[in-house]
Image 1 (cartoon, rainbow, N blue to C red):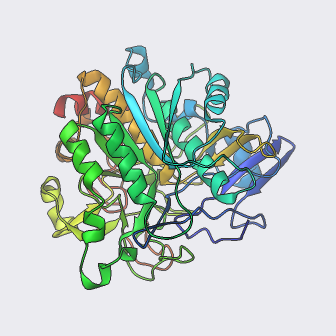
Image 2: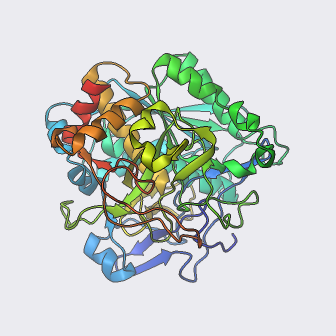
Length: 460
């Protein structure tokens, strides 16, 4: 383990519980250590999770209520039941819209050896039926080593991805792709391996929506400084393939506000920077909000921008020009691709309970945060909309921005504008403030699923 600062997008703080009377919080703002995300060299760029959870030394079997989290740690922590209420999912469930017949693909390095067991425990605890997780190993995936910080971190990421997707779309089929990423830093693996895995599944007809909770700063790719973006352009083949096959691609927008980590992952750029694949016009960039909920999951205040021990990633891409679906928000993004497109829960103050047992010394419940949670949450939403439509919706950008443009006069679109908070001054970089309409803190805003899912199915 090594100590890291919370400003890094590749780092996340979590809470692990020992017992209700003896709870320890792992956080960079306290004295406990956090684990740095594994950093993989990909054509010179560093790819890492956008944010995931790591367990405390003494995790155990009890959960804290939201009030107990607030009293012990001064943060709110939420269950899937609260998320389901907050995003108005229950009317859909009662109508049989649960993601049945649809498949969510999640891509992570190394994976978790206990992913099915952990999802079963998670589901049982909250009164949900579990789902079968198909594990696809791509390349030479090493045997899991609980003593390896990289394996532990990615196992936490895999667990977060699976449990958040299941929390929203409980009957969706889940495929977890585990890649065996070369840690040598030779620049030949990493993102390319992930893209190869995605393309292989797409070509085989596996998956309706792909969620990616990883990213690499655009500035770190070879050729960037000279304006040669071919190293990024040459990685887009999986997304182009997804577009041809009608598969929706999502990417977490990151947790460093308007900036992003430098090549070594030890600091953030002192100026605005964006990350790929979030910046890709073929990927729906999912940013982060903070939910303000009571014990039932009802809102006690409107959602605000995620900005506590991380910040919703967003800004302009110097690599990609403004795509046509953002022409309506051209006054905000100018001539460049702007991110994020939409946002879901990601704040540490409002983090998600997750269960894991991949490390036998750290079995139990943890609170996780980051846009790594937001992307699989939204993947569940897309799976629900695919079920309603009866087919894959593919690239939903045009539908998303069309619904947003209608939302001020038509609340049935299910787009909920976020107008509070900012991702500015994270890591000392001036960012963006949430305002009426589209902004580069939360995109078009967030969603009311009971309205948004059928509207997206129809518009898409």
